[in-house]
Image (cartoon, one colour):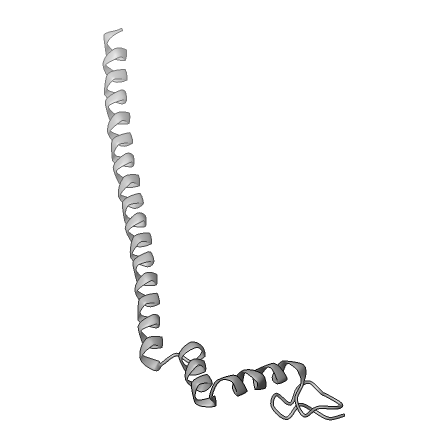
Length: 105
């Protein structure tokens, strides 16, 4: 079994390259290998600065999401506290009114 000399994964019996690598070789023949390398580096490889910017942007998005969730939780807790206070106030008023009604009868 003879493996492709470029990818060393697929095998070819009559040629030194597999079908996929043969296509790549044709493209290399059309353009210079320097041009192909430049394109591959621009498209496939990210510079560390760009990657760092991407990571920072993703971290900011995550932080904003977390801050929004915290804000929602705080508002929910505040609403619960206010509704409990209101309920207690209403219950006390009702008790007073019931007490007055009982005394009146």
